[in-house]
Length: 306
Ligand code: ATP
Image (cartoon, rainbow, N blue to C red):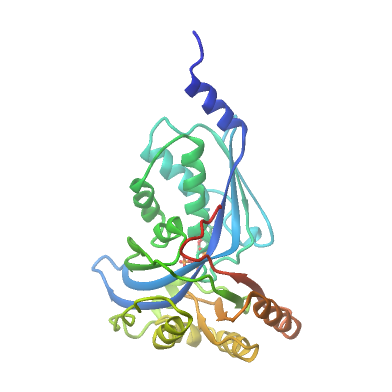
């Protein structure tokens, strides 16, 4: 029987690795707005994604495999516990018979359990790469599958400046949001999201300030100054070194320093990428044990793999 174009295209796809970036997520602001009966917290968060990213590569293979490399791979779960493997299995369950055996490689540059959504972003990148490999146009179903893997996965699938609400399922991309030079830093202490939420005193907090009409530099700074991360006070109580990181970012010249997510990573905003790189280098000299990285966030018009 003659082979169809689809079969040939599938084979070509299987032979060529497909790579996707899994950018770090930075919560520029985060409000805890309540808790549902099932225990999930209702959040409102303005999040951006950075050029600094993990990398996922997938390729058709004789049997399933998963391998991780990179500086933080020893900290991430090795097998079925890894969200990348969970993403593969969830995609297979949602589209039976579509995704054959696959070799997945993860290059882990982002610290684990650090409040920058590395696991969620890896899962999102795996869903994108695997659906592309299998020729699945999943559309909105990818976000639904992602939400089953973790509350932050839908926003990581969007991977552009956005406002997230609910438990993370409601995502509104922001137009005209600029790229921001940042320094990310943490004291090398992992803090689990569940522990921080458990230490939270007030679960019903005010919403974030109303968004400005445009994101000029002044409007952005004014909005960020009025905004906050409600998880910062409990995280600081659990892990006082976070305070040292915030102080060091300010001392290095950040015009704003705040914790991302449930910590312990904090971000500092700088005027230029060069200023961010210099600040990161100076901080690394005085705190050689911290994880410190200068990067730039993606603007509204930037695409993560483009
Ligand atoms: P959250 O998305 O809850 O804010 P986080 O940013 O603080 O999480 P992650 O790096 O996503 O932290 O890790 C959260 C948990 O997910 C860790 O306990 C880790 O063991 C698990 N995990 C599973 N897969 C991965 C992965 N690919 N990379 C990192 N962590 C993973």
